[in-house]
Length: 56
Image 1 (cartoon, rainbow, N blue to C red):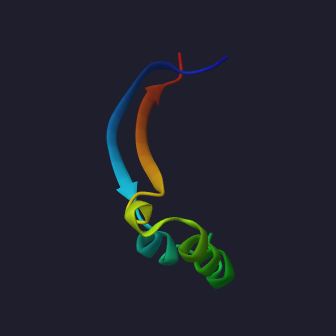
Image 2 (image 1 turned 135 degrees about the vertical axis):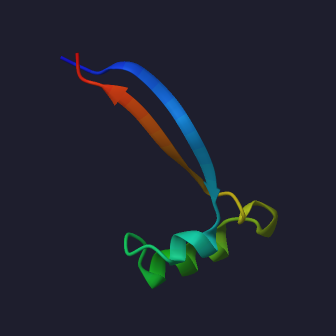
Image 3 (image 1 turned 120 degrees about the vertical axis):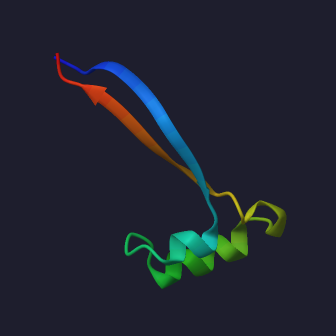
């Protein structure tokens, strides 16, 4: 069984600087992102979503 009444309540853009604050990203990955992602796109490399739902 899945979930019902899914609602996306919030979406936040994450830049590389935001990612650097999270333990998921190692310093090596952050450095690689800074090198490979164009400067004009570094402010939005991911989106965090808050999803609300209920179990039927």
